[in-house]
Image 1 (cartoon, rainbow, N blue to C red):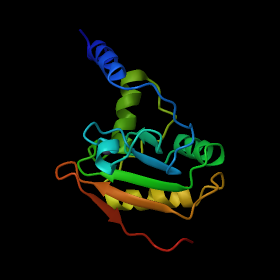
Image 2 (image 1 turned 90 degrees about the vertical axis):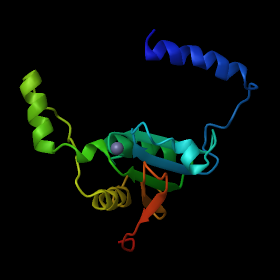
Image 3 (image 1 turned 60 degrees about the vertical axis):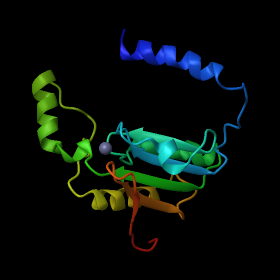
Image 4 (image 1 turned 180 degrees about the horizontal axis):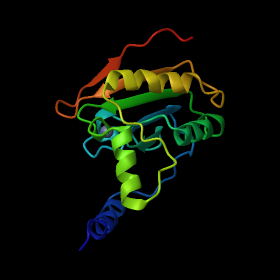
Length: 168
Ligand SMILES: [Zn+2]
Protein backbone atom coordinates (compact mmCIF):
# COMPACT_ATOMS: atom_id res chain seq x y z
CA UNK A 1 0.00 0.00 0.00
CA UNK A 2 1.47 3.34 -1.00
CA UNK A 3 1.15 6.55 0.97
CA UNK A 4 -1.37 7.75 -1.60
CA UNK A 5 -3.46 4.60 -1.16
CA UNK A 6 -3.59 5.26 2.57
CA UNK A 7 -4.58 8.89 2.15
CA UNK A 8 -7.21 8.02 -0.43
CA UNK A 9 -8.70 5.61 2.08
CA UNK A 10 -8.47 8.22 4.85
CA UNK A 11 -10.56 10.58 2.74
CA UNK A 12 -13.55 8.27 2.83
CA UNK A 13 -13.61 8.54 6.63
CA UNK A 14 -13.08 12.30 6.51
CA UNK A 15 -15.92 12.87 4.04
CA UNK A 16 -18.37 10.67 5.94
CA UNK A 17 -17.61 12.50 9.20
CA UNK A 18 -18.73 15.85 7.79
CA UNK A 19 -22.07 17.19 6.62
CA UNK A 20 -22.21 18.25 2.98
CA UNK A 21 -22.04 21.98 2.50
CA UNK A 22 -21.02 24.68 0.09
CA UNK A 23 -18.67 27.60 0.80
CA UNK A 24 -18.18 30.65 -1.44
CA UNK A 25 -15.19 30.37 -3.80
CA UNK A 26 -14.12 33.84 -2.58
CA UNK A 27 -12.07 33.57 0.64
CA UNK A 28 -14.11 35.07 3.48
CA UNK A 29 -11.10 36.71 5.16
CA UNK A 30 -10.04 38.32 1.83
CA UNK A 31 -6.57 36.94 2.48
CA UNK A 32 -3.90 35.10 0.48
CA UNK A 33 -1.03 33.30 2.23
CA UNK A 34 2.22 32.41 0.47
CA UNK A 35 4.35 29.83 2.26
CA UNK A 36 6.76 26.93 1.92
CA UNK A 37 5.82 23.36 1.06
CA UNK A 38 7.51 22.22 4.28
CA UNK A 39 5.69 19.23 5.78
CA UNK A 40 5.99 20.51 9.36
CA UNK A 41 3.92 23.63 8.81
CA UNK A 42 0.19 22.97 9.13
CA UNK A 43 -0.97 26.38 7.93
CA UNK A 44 -4.60 25.92 8.96
CA UNK A 45 -3.81 24.70 12.47
CA UNK A 46 -0.95 27.16 13.08
CA UNK A 47 -3.09 30.17 12.17
CA UNK A 48 -6.49 29.04 13.37
CA UNK A 49 -7.64 29.16 9.78
CA UNK A 50 -10.77 27.42 8.55
CA UNK A 51 -11.90 26.17 5.15
CA UNK A 52 -13.13 28.92 2.87
CA UNK A 53 -11.20 31.70 4.62
CA UNK A 54 -7.95 32.18 2.65
CA UNK A 55 -5.99 31.13 -0.40
CA UNK A 56 -2.83 29.19 0.52
CA UNK A 57 -0.07 29.18 -2.11
CA UNK A 58 2.86 26.89 -1.44
CA UNK A 59 6.16 26.12 -3.13
CA UNK A 60 9.73 25.28 -2.12
CA UNK A 61 10.76 28.20 0.07
CA UNK A 62 7.51 30.16 -0.10
CA UNK A 63 9.13 32.14 -2.88
CA UNK A 64 7.24 34.91 -4.68
CA UNK A 65 7.85 33.47 -8.14
CA UNK A 66 6.14 34.51 -11.36
CA UNK A 67 3.67 31.70 -10.79
CA UNK A 68 2.85 32.99 -7.32
CA UNK A 69 2.24 36.44 -8.82
CA UNK A 70 -0.04 34.74 -11.37
CA UNK A 71 -2.01 33.12 -8.55
CA UNK A 72 -2.12 36.34 -6.50
CA UNK A 73 -3.38 38.28 -9.53
CA UNK A 74 -6.23 35.80 -9.88
CA UNK A 75 -6.78 35.74 -6.11
CA UNK A 76 -7.11 39.53 -5.95
CA UNK A 77 -8.71 40.41 -9.27
CA UNK A 78 -11.19 37.55 -9.58
CA UNK A 79 -11.67 36.28 -6.07
CA UNK A 80 -11.54 39.40 -3.95
CA UNK A 81 -8.52 38.97 -1.67
CA UNK A 82 -6.86 42.15 -0.39
CA UNK A 83 -4.18 41.15 2.14
CA UNK A 84 -1.03 39.07 1.51
CA UNK A 85 0.67 37.13 4.32
CA UNK A 86 4.10 35.64 3.58
CA UNK A 87 5.42 32.86 5.83
CA UNK A 88 8.93 31.45 5.65
CA UNK A 89 10.24 29.16 8.37
CA UNK A 90 13.28 28.00 10.31
CA UNK A 91 15.33 25.01 9.07
CA UNK A 92 14.12 25.45 5.46
CA UNK A 93 15.41 23.07 2.80
CA UNK A 94 16.16 26.09 0.61
CA UNK A 95 18.93 27.08 3.03
CA UNK A 96 20.63 23.73 2.50
CA UNK A 97 21.54 24.18 -1.17
CA UNK A 98 22.93 26.85 -3.46
CA UNK A 99 21.53 28.05 -6.77
CA UNK A 100 24.75 27.26 -8.64
CA UNK A 101 25.24 23.89 -6.96
CA UNK A 102 21.70 22.63 -7.54
CA UNK A 103 21.63 24.01 -11.08
CA UNK A 104 24.89 22.14 -11.86
CA UNK A 105 23.50 18.99 -10.23
CA UNK A 106 20.39 19.10 -12.43
CA UNK A 107 22.38 19.81 -15.55
CA UNK A 108 24.86 17.04 -14.81
CA UNK A 109 22.11 14.51 -14.15
CA UNK A 110 19.95 15.39 -17.14
CA UNK A 111 22.09 17.23 -19.67
CA UNK A 112 19.64 20.12 -19.53
CA UNK A 113 20.05 23.40 -17.66
CA UNK A 114 16.79 24.26 -15.88
CA UNK A 115 14.92 27.27 -17.21
CA UNK A 116 13.67 28.21 -13.75
CA UNK A 117 15.41 30.09 -10.97
CA UNK A 118 16.36 27.89 -8.00
CA UNK A 119 15.87 30.68 -5.40
CA UNK A 120 17.85 29.25 -2.52
CA UNK A 121 18.59 31.61 0.38
CA UNK A 122 20.90 31.84 3.38
CA UNK A 123 19.22 34.66 5.36
CA UNK A 124 15.56 33.91 5.99
CA UNK A 125 14.70 37.46 7.12
CA UNK A 126 16.31 38.94 4.01
CA UNK A 127 14.37 36.52 1.84
CA UNK A 128 11.10 37.47 3.53
CA UNK A 129 11.85 41.15 2.89
CA UNK A 130 12.65 40.41 -0.76
CA UNK A 131 9.37 38.51 -1.08
CA UNK A 132 7.45 41.46 0.37
CA UNK A 133 9.12 43.79 -2.13
CA UNK A 134 8.23 41.52 -5.03
CA UNK A 135 4.57 41.66 -4.05
CA UNK A 136 4.69 45.41 -3.44
CA UNK A 137 6.37 45.99 -6.81
CA UNK A 138 4.12 43.82 -8.95
CA UNK A 139 2.00 45.87 -11.36
CA UNK A 140 -0.38 42.93 -11.78
CA UNK A 141 -1.72 43.14 -8.23
CA UNK A 142 -4.55 45.41 -7.13
CA UNK A 143 -3.83 45.43 -3.39
CA UNK A 144 -0.27 45.97 -2.19
CA UNK A 145 -0.90 47.98 0.96
CA UNK A 146 -1.20 45.12 3.44
CA UNK A 147 1.72 42.75 2.75
CA UNK A 148 3.35 41.31 5.86
CA UNK A 149 6.08 38.71 6.29
CA UNK A 150 6.71 36.18 9.05
CA UNK A 151 9.06 33.37 10.02
CA UNK A 152 7.51 30.24 11.55
CA UNK A 153 9.64 28.31 14.02
CA UNK A 154 9.17 24.62 13.18
CA UNK A 155 10.26 23.62 16.69
CA UNK A 156 8.26 25.94 18.97
CA UNK A 157 5.48 26.67 16.41
CA UNK A 158 5.61 30.44 16.94
CA UNK A 159 5.35 33.06 14.21
CA UNK A 160 7.71 36.03 14.29
CA UNK A 161 7.00 39.08 12.16
CA UNK A 162 9.85 40.38 9.99
CA UNK A 163 10.17 44.16 10.22
CA UNK A 164 10.13 45.98 6.92
CA UNK A 165 10.55 49.53 5.73
CA UNK A 166 7.69 51.81 4.71
CA UNK A 167 5.82 51.22 1.48
CA UNK A 168 7.89 52.89 -1.27
ZN1 LIG B 1 10.92 25.53 3.56
